[in-house]
Image 1 (tube, one colour):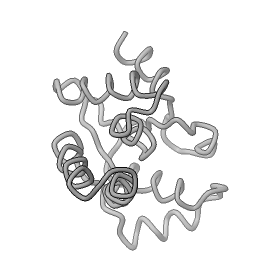
Image 2 (cartoon, helix red, strand yellow):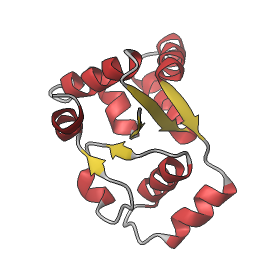
Image 3 (cartoon, helix red, strand yellow):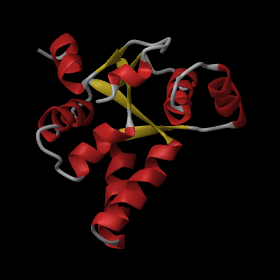
Image 4 (tube, helix red, strand yellow):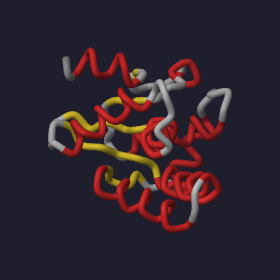
Length: 138
């Protein structure tokens, strides 16, 4: 079973119902829920999801979003090793480097993000949600 690392923006697209991105992101989560793939998110995604949902909605919605995410995704730790490895990468955005290293060290086989260009130096295959669905589902 393919282990799929979901970048934070993909999760927020679903939780905030951000058109036009919600449809593809929700389909990927449905495939994970159905057991077709294993979902992985970094530990920082959980805190970011809480923060964004709390600001956009309220504490109850934010906590429910985090609970839902826990049902779909394993947590990729953000450890000292992840941070040190991310520092060694020449990604233009350090947060993306941390996401990449959390994914890689957690055993992810592919990264799904709306910001594919930000992962141009990735060691793992990186796809937009739409391209991922074409390659792995349709």
